[in-house]
Image 1 (cartoon, rainbow, N blue to C red):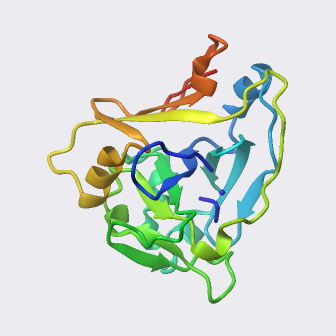
Image 2 (cartoon, rainbow, N blue to C red; image 1 turned 135 degrees about the vertical axis):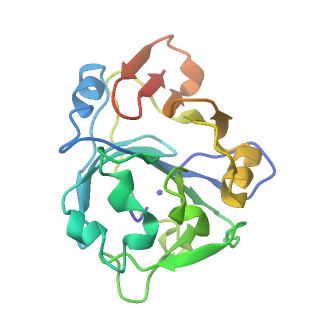
Image 3 (cartoon, rainbow, N blue to C red; image 1 turned 120 degrees about the vertical axis):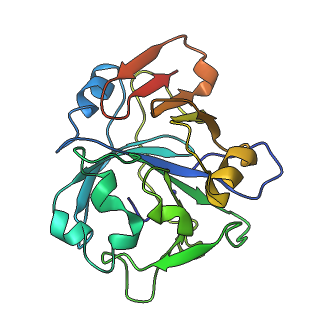
Length: 227
């Protein structure tokens, strides 16, 4: 989970998508399919003290993060445990593999109850507001870009296939017996489309799918990309 950056929502909410992560096997072999389809990879990242690392694909307004587990002990540490990353990134355990980061350019406080995740790789006085539903590891992890990170430069990585902006993100989830207030807010926000059907999957649409191309990436949580 990066300490974040991009997509604008056309709805009334003051929040917009910054990035989505999907937990994948070590070193993200799924990235090969993206590269072969003409997507350019941005800088990779290692989350010191969190026990994870990632590969990233940046677009004009948001980015896709392929996250994997490096150190289970770090992911289970007291500072990180409440995020549920130790279960989410352990592909042998049943859990949601998806995380959604949102931001508010106007500086609005999070619209759901959060706790301060003081990620070990952040400065001592910084934290990531994280929805209290993080303990429900069968739901996506929902977290918010700290206001101090707004405007932080991010890599500009043009894609050879011409893809530019994220225009729609849809998450398919198994139907739970109960939905947390945070997930209910996300589903109603218009920022991300949430459908409660089995199994979990992510659809990532670029430029409204104007080129008529698509790519399906298999995995614990399949990813479909349209551009």
